[in-house]
Image (cartoon, rainbow, N blue to C red):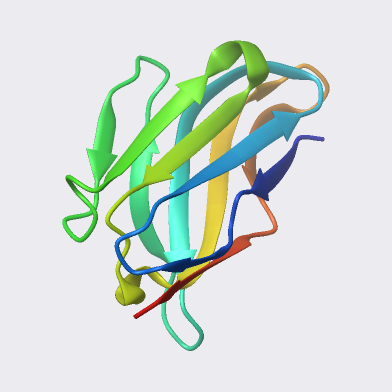
Length: 120
């Protein structure tokens, strides 16, 4: 079993910055793509950014130029640096990881979510 734990969510003023972290634990052999999603109440979950095992990245248009996704493979951790935050960035942010675990083979795991609130 592979577990993901997010941290770093907080209340911040517009224009501020936050750094989210998501650490994967378990009998992990390899992690392929890692993603950050966000979801507001009553809305569909939105893909914010992803990073592949080769460190290729992709961003939603709404965050490109303000957010940066990165990963530390030695720590099985993905980060989301969020700068120039806007009130519309207020959401619960979830991380997702896909890979291979020694115990269960392929996995597709989600974290529990971390709340980001941006005040105007």
